[in-house]
Image (cartoon, rainbow, N blue to C red; front, side, top):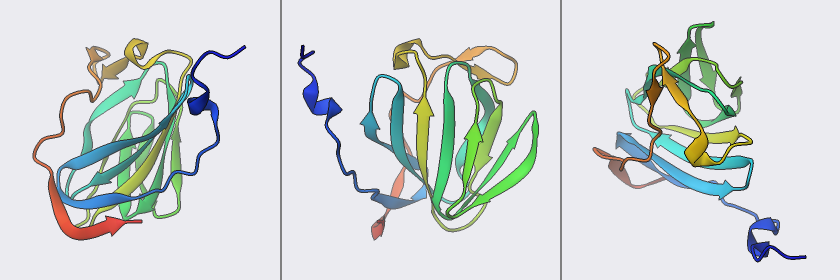
Length: 149
C-alpha cells in the first residue's frame, strides 16, 4: 500500500555544495525523512552558534567539511573540530560553536529525532525554551565565485 509519498523514499545522490560566506551563515536543507534531517551550513569568519543551548529531543552531529569549529559546552572542554572530523551531540547536550578563523567554515549537520520538527524543543543555558532557526538568515555576505564542492 502506498502512502502517496514514494519520491521521498527513493535513494538519492545529493551534492554537498554551498557558497562560501564572509559574514553570517547559510543553512541549506539537503534531505529530510520522518526521523532524520541533513543540512549543509556555511559560516563566515568569527560567526557560529555562540549561545549555549541544547536540543531536548534530537541527537545530532556536525561534520566539518572545510575549516574548523570551536565547540564548548557545560559538559565539555573547549574542543576544536577540524576538517574531516565530526562531533556527536546526544540530546540534552548543551553546546555552542564558533568559527574563530578568518576563513570559511562549512559543516554537514545531521539530526535524528522521533518527533516532528515542530514538536522538537531547544533550551537556552538556563533551561528556558527557545525557538529554532525558522527566522530568515540576515546579514549574510556571500563570497562571489567561491564555493565548497
